[in-house]
Image 1 (spheres, rainbow, N blue to C red):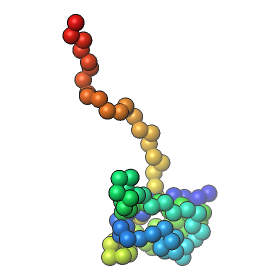
Image 2: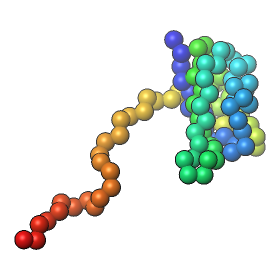
Image 3: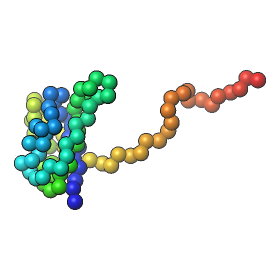
Length: 98
C-alpha cells in the first residue's frame, strides 16, 4: 500500500525531478505533485510525494533536513476534507422591500 507525504517549506526554485531524486534514495516514488499558485504560476512552497515503500524512512531522514537553503517539513498527508459552504454573495439573508 502506498503512502502520501506532505512536503513543506520547499524552495520556490525546486522542481519535481529534484524532489523525486531526493525521495528515491528511500524507496519507490510513485508520484510527485508540487502545488502551484493559480494566478502567478509560481510554486507555493509545498507539495506531495506518494511512495510505494520507504515513506516512513524518508520522512524520518528528511524532516528538518536542509534543502535549497530551507529546512524541509515532512509528515504523512491527511486526506483532503470536502469543502463546505457556497460561493460569494453577502452573508446575510436578502430582504424584500415590498
